Amino acid sequence: MGVAVESEADLEAKRPPYIHAMLAGGLGGLTGDMLMHSLDTVKTRQQGDPHMPPKYTSMGSTYHTIFRQEGLLRGLYGGVVPAFLGSFSGTVIFFGTYEWCKRTMVDTGIAPPIAYFSGGLIADLFAAPLYVPSEVLKTRLQLQGRYNNPYFESGYNYRGTWHAARTIVRVEGWAALFHGFKATLARDLPFSALQFAFYEHEQKLAKAWLNWT
Image (tube, rainbow, N blue to C red):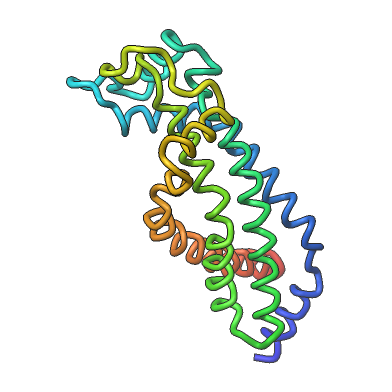
């Protein structure tokens, strides 16, 4: 038991500054969204396909159809601006909150696995008010337009991110930016809690194995 406590103390002595953890999380989230946004658009179009029979039948054909009809920026990368804004701000808040909660709980004597689990849950709770509205804006921009919706004869509802935000608030009210908030929390809170509990534990096992070998 003494060895485990010393190992934990050594690990916690190497804590990075909060700002490092926050910026690393924000840049990581931004990079992931930049690389994967077109795939997210394909997924969103397939999940929300209103056509009968379905228009988007496979990943490859969906990529080709969206690019051919709508191009790169408005088509495959529609909604990328709110995705970037929500991802960066959300992950900055997430990792800052997670590190603070984890360190505070560990320092007060709470068992590390509980600290990691609780930290992940609380961090996502604080980040959700930022990334849920960005998800709403992103999804609206990804799904808009006559090419995606056969019942929509005109062009696009939203000219861009800020126009979409203003239009949604004016027509539907502020609450519309938080549609799906409870469902998102029900999905993401346990995911983040379990993810970081397992991540921290497996990281310690990997370091112990490297030291042993």
